[in-house]
Length: 418
Image (cartoon, rainbow, N blue to C red):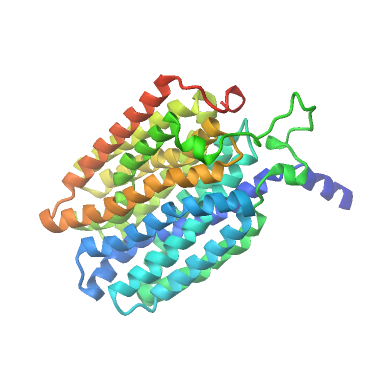
């Protein structure tokens, strides 16, 4: 029996354990962060603040957890992804617990914005970067599976937060979420940087001779990558897209409440984004391996624009649910496909560092977009302009990716990864 169990365990490629650990980090970290929409009304009421001022809490956190990838990514390439992921999850827990004690909005900015922002920033890029190295042929699928933790976290955590707020108040809810975040730190112990450290090849392939070996060890330096046309195009695309990409995570619930949707139903709309996102990360990530990851990236950006148009005309819970699911599918596909495109272009040697630099674009968009949408609402009492601008931004982002794909610039990594 022992020998059978050992053989069964050895038959499971260790890369899938790395995927599972990254999934757990995404589930707990982003799931906690994306509960924010459920807290917007209680925070606005208790601190007597405008919707734009409260939205800035999420914008600060979002800016940090994408911007810090420029630091955590290179550190992961040098020191390994596991310690950074563990520290990140501990910081998320501390930030949420500290937010439960906040006596002013400034203290919420410091506790939630800095704690959750720095924590997720430490963990996200290292975890997703580690997954890229363990796979070649199934990279899109593995990446999609790992980041589907964000989708399932968005599905499960906001309704849980809403129940906690109803039963123990927003302070007790933040404290409970902090305790849950510690679980992510424990599961992050399974993250490992590179299959070669275990004497394995990507995808679990058997050892080959030097001429036929499959490897992710090659690739460009960060300096070389950021000077390339492909990187600049990806950066511009991500920057433009992210101005609107996170607006629904903050404003969909208050939008629904403004249109007469009950609070219990409104918070479930975030869960619909999570459900769609899980499907998109899982299926569109796998589809990208077949149809080409460049084409898939263009498709998901156009899909996000289409979903925003649905939101612009939605006025009841069913139309909003349709928007939330469709948007989630394409948003999830965007998050899943993008790291694989980076790996295709630039190789695995410095993939975490390159992804970290790329995600600073998302950081700036996240800092501006949700808070600007809130201030626009405070001014006009309407979300129409932010929603339509978000749709236009996604179309522009897709056109940028089309342009760099059409250039035919020689890639560092060629057919082995596409």
